[in-house]
Amino acid sequence: MMLSAEDNFSELFSAHNESPQQYAQRLTAILQHVAFLAPHRVPLADALGQVLAEPIDAALDSPSFDNSQMDGYVLTAADALSDAREFTVGHDIPAGFQGSVDVCDRVVHPIMTGAPIPQGFSAVVPVERSQAVDSEVDAQGFVAEGGRVRLPEAEPGTFVRTAGEDIRRGTRLVDAGTVLGAVHLGVLAGQGIGEVLVHRRPRVLVYTGGEEVQADSGSLQAGKIYDANAPLLTGLLAADKITEVTARRITDDAEEFQGILATDSATYSPDLVVTCGGISAGRYEVVRNALNALAKKGEADCWFGHISQQPGGPQGVSVLSLTEQRIPVISLPGNPVSTLVTYTRAVRVALNAVYFLGVTDQPVTAQLSTTDTVKGLDAKTQFRRGTTTMGFLPDGAAVLTAEIKGGAGSHLLHAASESNCLIELEPGREYKNKDAVRIWYLPD
Image (cartoon, rainbow, N blue to C red):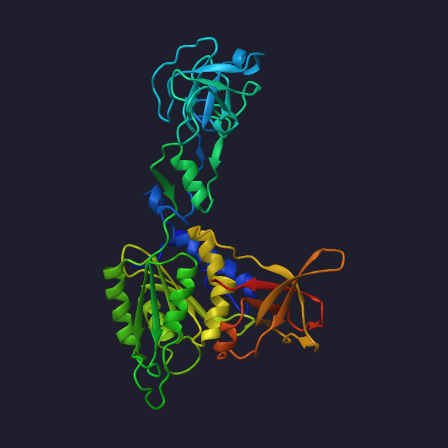
């Protein structure tokens, strides 16, 4: 199946030596062409951490009725300010009370927290401020019905939660695009909302491997390496709330990989495919060779090349047309740190823009903390791993500092594990202590 002419992908698949920012924008543009996922409704109990797809306004006032803020005695407006402060005790008004209450001079009623304020009553005196008059009190301090109680004066409205005090009907409760937290769920549940429309997150197929990658964690064979990329990439996706991920291993056989792609596309119906490795200029670049072969058959559109970034220069992006559903493929370089950098700097930016993940994917500014001058590469943006610290200046102003951790090599994964950010070094620029740098927080 060929991609239709109206898709006009030619520009998106013909780039050269892009900056990391340009590459992130191009990934976003390609995904926006083919990766739309209709929002779906989920039970409110399953919506924690998901991104709301439509605004929600209040259908009800909250509280929906005047109710007591305290356990105490409810009084009429006249009795609340009367000079005479001794009253006869009427019947209880518990929470959930649905009966009527007669308004009688000099009669007050024990009322519990959350119970409705009866018509004609306007103030509550907490039970701990009451004093029994020739009457016994129960364990909670209340006088029994028919007894006498002395109460202090209270302004009308004292300890009364009025209808609509928290929310007025028609008030915007939650905006579209909000990542739903526990408090949002509480607010929505308080309006009787049982399900919400949220953005659907993609099903992702992850391919890692190659002949040099050992398929198990047994004793390492000569010339082999363990697969760090599969748990790294699935972990990065999970950190960004994409949990419907299937990880698959591949060899260096390009023809075999074409068959695997066709079978898995039909079996798993992925919304996105992400590959690690096999995209450089060598003879056995399985991903590049397989996807280019599919492109020659009209079953894919592909781009493989370099961006002006270190680590993570080799990159690839494709769109498969093996089924009725077109599937975007993002191909990352094989070194684990290159995968980490590209995912953080470009892939999650594109995924967040298209799939509404609700993650923080923009840089912040920090002061570089270094004892030596640090110089960026001549023609590439370099990303060093680092840690951040929040401190305070003598005048009390907060200042965020970032310190480089470990070397620049794309194989130095351990140093990355001890970091929480990427420190961006602009091409050819020299940085001294306290110079401003942009940092990108790593997914956590």
